[in-house]
Image (cartoon, rainbow, N blue to C red; front, side, top):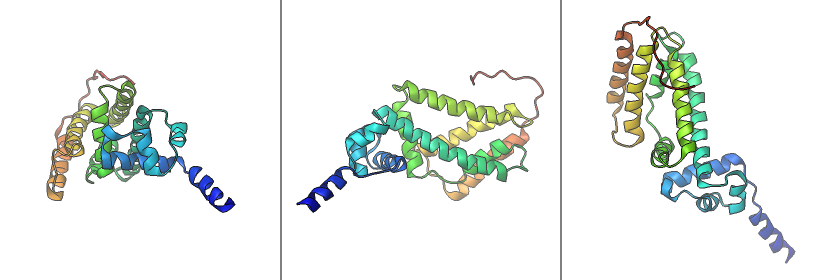
Length: 203
């Protein structure tokens, strides 16, 4: 019957936006883990055809890159907002990142961290993206009066974050705020250095 045929065609040609496919990628990684991330799994999760996913993402690597890009964009928007909030602090770029860490990572952030960790050794493109992100942050650390101190504190903060991203530590709210206050104090206690520093990272 024409009605049934029309319904069938609509089911096969379900229209979705790119952000809906990205939502499906995130759900797959959160529910199944990165090892089971695939074009088929994303298509099934989104309720669309495999060819529709392939239209935007040609491989599992492309799915991972999209996942990372989306998380980086979210983080950048959040940091930009916090930099404005921390404008009166000794180092707005650094203190914005410390303030960002006051909020525990959610399931998606943990899933992205684990996906990057498990895939980066074999995926050159993911290594490049992570390197670009790190370089961006390290350049931001040069914005204050004590860039060397800011870099040291930044790496201490990354260590704090990584333990949570990978599920190694579950901080209580009190422990979290106490530790982050200690990180802020670390920056304040570092003497100002006027000597030029050598940057081993590449922009």
